Length: 429
Ligand SMILES: [Zn+2]
Image (cartoon, rainbow, N blue to C red; front, side, top):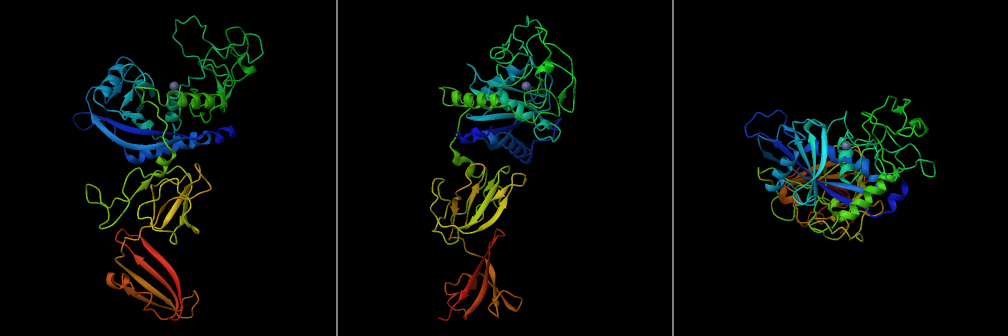
């Protein structure tokens, strides 16, 4: 499994759509950005070990009385065509559709559009997109999107059974795992249903040639099984197939279902805008609109206050700027959108544990006020004088020149609520 870490990263976008009725109320709550971000974090936790990454691409909704409520086996093609005809998909992203119910399964994956495979579609019951009791659902459907089949045989009832995988493994009599079942050798033959205890096979069933499944017990913990509550892993064979399929489909003419992106998109905010100069950026409602990053990775931010000026973040491939100590960090389980403070650069440890990137060192931003703390004993203790500064005095270019010799903490406050502290030891002029 560790060997996948040495392979190139594969970076996919995921876009969400909330299907709503023409008239309110609808039968399911509106899908929220937080639910989508939680789902993306879950996908990343389950796939990052294989160097497969997911970027949150946004949340939209559409209104349609025919499809918001229930997707059936009978209308799923009509649903797909409706999405295609109305441009309700993002080319190059996995598109996840939240509906009230799906009556043949709780969720499904399909390739949509005419000619097959134009865009990818994951239909999902609304409360399975972010549900602690069903955390594997999107991971399972995404496995299908990357061409994985179920680990059990689920062919039509009238199939003569020739596609059922035998228990035999490589080199044994009746081996057919390379051509039957999911055609992946390290997922063992699995009956459609079986009894289990603590996610372990405990049944006495036999395969079509009379061999006991218990010889190679079915893997209930596999994401592509239907063993509810057990699914938590892929096999190396499945990961190899998924990576090969992504690479195969990526770039095929006319197919946008799966497109591999450059790694730098993970270092771009999923929404918001970096301050360049002038007033702080705001959204359409007039609210402050800082750049926000999806959680679910390990982020580490570094001080770049002594680096050159980067009034917008440096490009991803630049790593030769000055940086100092760690200013903040967030682990993979932190679950609130992450901001990029001025005068910092950051690592995403799952991508690159060596280099902080995206140096944001903006010197256009003027503080609106601040505080000067003078340490009277020239050491960090509580013997201080504190002087409030208005916007004129804190922005005075001679602020430091005019200070008496000594040790100071200069705190600059900004309109967006952030502040910058600078310790200085002023020598005699
Ligand atoms: Zn499935």
